[in-house]
Length: 205
Ligand SMILES: [Fe+2]
Image (cartoon, rainbow, N blue to C red; front, side):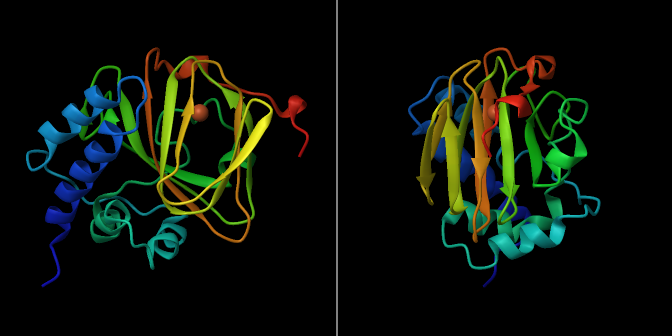
């Protein structure tokens, strides 16, 4: 029997909690606790269509990770947009065209929290998200696909299960080749979006 979208949404929050609990980075346990408490209590609402919905469907189509499978089962509730709804002023469209983001937890989100933020991120194949940084401490956990993650002057290939940690103000960039990249993301510390900066002039791409 196929699980309902509501049950898949509950499973998604629990899977996110499990992955963040074990990510080994600052505030992972606190973020996990908030998600776990919300699972089964938060009433998800159907999302409005976004231009990259079909990319998300395609990226998750054959995903095996239980978190990715849960996301696939509740896509009707996942509100995708350019930057998860909070960095639109900082990220120009020619940059955000490479990806789509979703905010599930944070100020004004389904899972309400005044400072901690978390959601999902999908980057299209053969795209580049240039160097940027922010005061917030950031962790990504890969749940599908392959990404080439630049942290400072080092670039590392990560597949499913990869955990990528960006301390406050560390420069980072993401690249995809033939595969898309699907990851969980979370912010802690100073999560004010005004501290976000892009540095295309530093880019060697
Ligand atoms: Fe970041």
